[in-house]
Length: 321
Image (cartoon, rainbow, N blue to C red; front, side, top):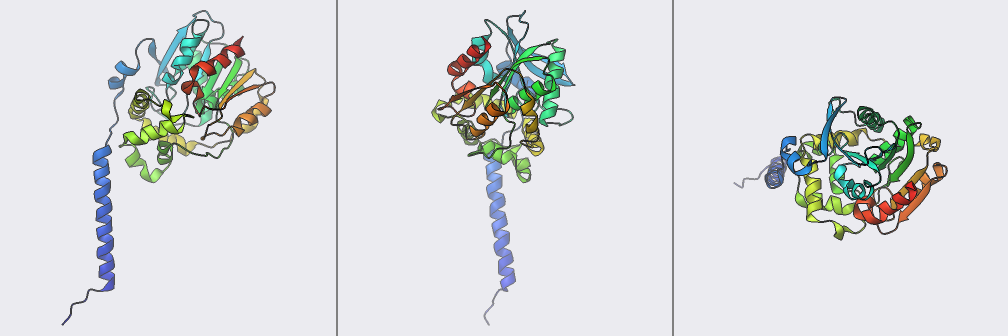
């Protein structure tokens, strides 16, 4: 007598086999790409040499560099973007510090500063943090600039404390709603809550390299040393979890109406090849901020200050004259 399996049983066995195969592949991927958090102490020797210092602000130990002319009445304050660090400004700082005091920092959730205790990563919270940091450093008046998220924080500081801000520099800044032409793979994965456990415990080298190359106009400029730096900052304990929280709290364009209130001399620098925040947003800033100046670098991407620091800082020096 022929033994025939019930169709339901065959389907069950097929699905069970498929699930087992998926689990095996996932387990193999975890084993190959496993990358645990690194404690701060392990990173500071390599990434926080002098003049780096740590200043306590709002219960957070903040990685800060304060360089250049000590008696400058209006220091230049530079704020990095998502998943970056103060290192992104090193070439600008080197070019500016002979004539200016320049302050750069790792903002909460990124770099060596790491997560906030209260996990508040809304952009207005970042603006309050910046003012608290500058109060702690006893900086009254200042010039403020930022890239991407840092640019959004910079103009929100200018809106919140216009009497303290002498000039504003926006570099591919956030602020308006936008539709990316292309988003770095690391950002796309970090936005998926269902993958949070995996993204917080693995970090494939090719993913990090692809993410950095994605924000450059010319990906061939991305060096192994650059990828190493971004990787180290990502692995700082707590940063990957905080990045996911930051993306869940992001609301592009929520504060955009206040941009038109800015009456501070403003320089807008943008990469014409920015595929994350398109150049159309540069023109919106230029239209909404009365008297602002827009300088477009047609061949550069989302981080023009890092991709071609010499050309972009020349525009800043001209603006500061």
